[in-house]
Amino acid sequence: MDNRAGEMEVFVAVSETRSFSAAARRLKLSPSAVSKLVTRIEDRLGTRLLVRSTRTLQLTPEGEVYFQRAQRILGDIAETEHVVAAGGRMAPRGLLRVNAAVGFGERYIMPLAPEFLARYPEVQLDLTLTDSMIDVVGERTDVAIRTGPLRDSSLKARKLMETRPVVIATPAYLEKYGIPQTPDDLDGHNCVRFNFRRSVDEWAFRAPGQSQIAHRTVSGNMQVSSGSIVRQLCLASVGIGRIGRFHVEPDFEAGTLVPLLEDYQSGEIETVYAVYAGHEHLAARIRAFIDFLAERM
Image 1 (cartoon, helix red, strand yellow):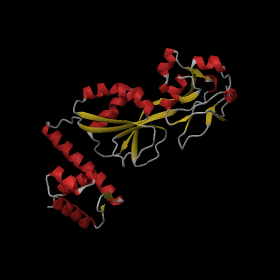
Image 2: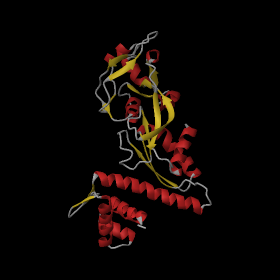
Image 3: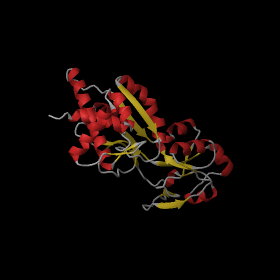
Image 4: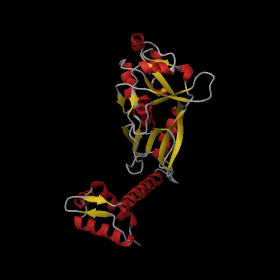
């Protein structure tokens, strides 16, 4: 019987290091043996997995698929052996890669991380905070925290919380430039906007007693990439912003920011999800992290 798991281990090492020599050193094999094993896999599958040049190795699309699946299978094998060795108890362990929006990560994940790691001491947390959209599978992310509808049908999502947009400013800014009483008053204010490709220079409002949502074009001299930066600029009295309420609840309590145009809120709800690659046997570390967030949210 072929040693498919051993071949996968070799291919994963080559894919991660982008080098036959580096993979050989990791696995204590010769570079020629590593090269022959990769060629054997390609011959059996009847397709090229790696594009070789004198300096680099690149995965083909088929190689990327094989790499991702092989990584997952090897992880399952390691976890199975760990569970059996532990007498059947499924103890979360291993590297957990989490990607979250900056504001959510700063507000929730970073403060909760010590508690999670104390509860699961065999887990190593690799946390990246970015408001850029990522390829969860392609970037080998275990869990991504994102707001809005799920666009990739191959992924699964668990709802963590709901929030709504809120318009904000500091008392100092409002004292200097005045308090907008209606959305039309925003014409006279510096509005901090997002520069996302999917964003627009419009804020949604609904007049009291009305059912229809109206979109108000706003303008200003700053465009930024995250709600966290909007919050910081508003705290510096640069202008008026509109972000998810979860960003600024502590600021409202402290009085450093105040909500505006509350009577004109559109009623929009933003849902925050934990997004992950669907799998019949979800790794214990991933399930534990998602369950922990859902519990603590």
